[in-house]
Image (cartoon, rainbow, N blue to C red; front, side, top):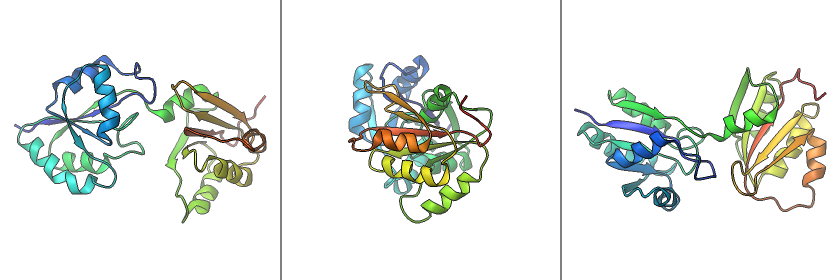
Length: 227
């Protein structure tokens, strides 16, 4: 009998944001697949989980899939985790899940934190219909994608790094100048912040500042007005 592949959501910052079911699953599986063993080890230590870790990141994913599938077919069970949040959402795992499904292996979700939903819920912006783009291309195709998104009337959710957040705000001033924006920094962590305003206002807020952390940027739908 084939083993099972569990897709386990982990905290996006605060280590207390993990479900009882996630802890139970991580204790029960044969192996844990993770992006960075050092990051996952911190979480496991917090909950006294002793388990063999199997490194699996964006670079090594394709190469390591066959070995994981073979072990699953032999009856071993794996938990797939990312460094934070829900695997396969702007993180490795999509190819593994796809291959497991094709091979008839049962894939089970252990739901939990994900930055995009957390940001949406505190944004105050329309959530009934939205588009999630994740990280924009760093160079080629970036401006084309921004133009396409600017023509979408729905709420838009993006991820961005500290290295490009100022650049993104400048770009939003070009493509989304009349749409309200909410920027969530370091969600659930000690220095969590939420900035709200139009792109010009956010640009003024960031000018001259050294910005660190991870960001979720929520852009209001075209028909939403800040009243």
